[in-house]
Image 1 (cartoon, rainbow, N blue to C red):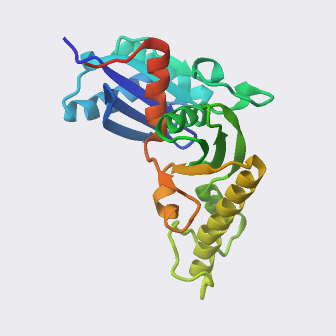
Image 2: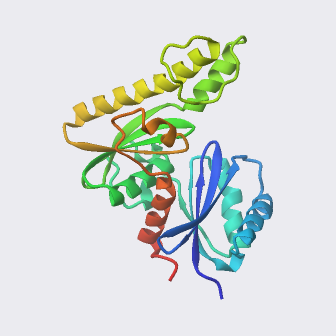
Length: 263
């Protein structure tokens, strides 16, 4: 008899994150690069071996939920759930199943990850919210005190900016994202690091200030995504970091639609 665990899948432009929940507790997570040609069988070989290392078998998975912003990857991931975990996954690819109001002109245009972030943030933090996701794109989303999605901002992600510098400027080296000690660079690498790091600090601070001015209400700013921890200490307007916000949002959306799994 399996343990009735929930498998959550966040399929982004750069990585696909698989995670397991035992009730409300996030117990395991695994990450693989997004590759639209990867098959269900290839996912299964990789994922089931990692799960076995953590003493989780296919029979332990009771249900699954998928959020994807890469439609080409959905078929294989859904096939993985059906063939290897014997469950028909709940797919979040638009606002229909999320359970919150989406107050923009074209609700289906909002990425599934941004909507589940909104759900999780509203469950965790009171009042008006700004959710910053440092992903492939850097997004800022506004959630009302009642939990409705009110719109947002999409900017190029930090690593996309680095890729653009690397491709377009032949003499500039490839650099890693890190916080430089000084704003004024004294060499090419330090100047590039300053431009990327402090440039994004200025971008976020400016956008948060303009959002707060436009909304005219007290707001809490929550950061998530892989680079959130790197930027949080430099951006005074970030009030909290929630590293696994998307995964918890997927669990909330699943429970809203199908009821909770686990004990």
